[in-house]
Image (tube, rainbow over all chains, first blue to last red; front, side, top):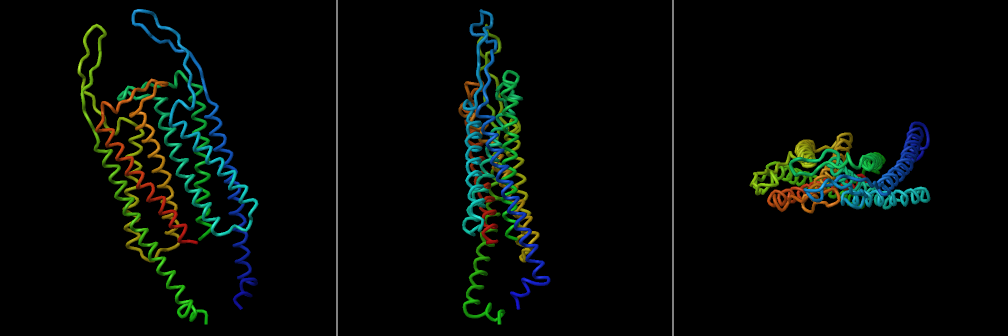
Length: 190
Length: 190
C-alpha cells in the first residue's frame, strides 16, 4: 500500500516534485562548479601574469640629484599574492576534477557526496583566507600606513594594482560559488 | 506492524543507536559552540587590548644627531587588525546567542537548524578571511619587504607582535570550531 501511494495520487506528485527539485539542484551544482573553475582560473592567471616595470626618481647620494631607477612589480614578490595564486590554482584544479567526476558519475554515492561537501568547505576556507590576505596587502599598497611608515605604492604601479584588484574580485566570485555549493548540498539533505 | 518493529528487536536497536548518535552530535555541537565563543572572545580581547609604546631613534634633521621619539602600536592603526577584532567580536556574539538558543530549544526545528548551518558557514568565511588578512599584515611586520620598501616593525614592537600572533592562533581555533560545526551538521543529515 505504502509503495503504491508513493507512485500514485499525492504520493506520485510529491515524488515528482522531489525528483524535479533534485534535478534542479544537480543542474545548479554543475553550473556553480563551472563558475568556480572559470573564476578561480581567471583570478590565478590575472594575478600570475601581472607585472609592471616603471622608473622612479631615487636620491642615492644626498649631495647628488635624484636618479631614475627602473623598478618592477611581480606577484611572487609578496607572500600574500603567492598564497592567493596557489590557493586559486588549487581551487581551480579541484573544480575541474569534481566537475568531471560529477558529470561522469551520475549515481551520486553517499560517501562520494560527503567527500565533495567536505572539500567544497575546505575550498571556502582556503579562498576566503587568500582573498583576505591579498585584500589586506592590496589596501596597504593603495593607502599606505603612516604608523608603521609603509608608503603607498599604487601611485607608481597603477596598472599592476588595478589588475590585482580585478583578480581579487574574480576570486571573491569563486569563493561565493563554493559557498553556495555547500549551502545547496545542505539544502539537498533537508 | 511497522511502528512495532521500530520499538522492538533490530528496529529498536537501530533507533537506539540513532538516538545515541544524535545525542553525541548534540553534545559535540554545544562543546564546539562554547569553544568558538571562548576562542573568538579571547582573540578579540588579546588583540583589542594590545598596545605598546617604545622609543626609536629618528634622524629629523640630517645635520643633527638622531632624537629618541616615542612611538605607539595599537590595533586600530591597521585596517586588517580592525577587521580581525570586528570579525571575532561578531563570531563571539553569534556563538553566545546560538549556544543560548540551542540549550533553551531542545526540539531543533528544521528551519532553525538550517539557519544555524547557514550562519555557521558565514562565520567560517568571515573568520578565515580575517585570519588571512591579519596574518598577511603580521608577516609583513615580522619580515618586511624590500620590493615595496616596507620595513619590518616587529623588532621595535616585539611584545605587540607576539601578542598579535597569539590572537591569530586563537582565532584559527575559533575558525576550525565553526568549520567542524558545519561538517557535523552535514553528517547529521546523512
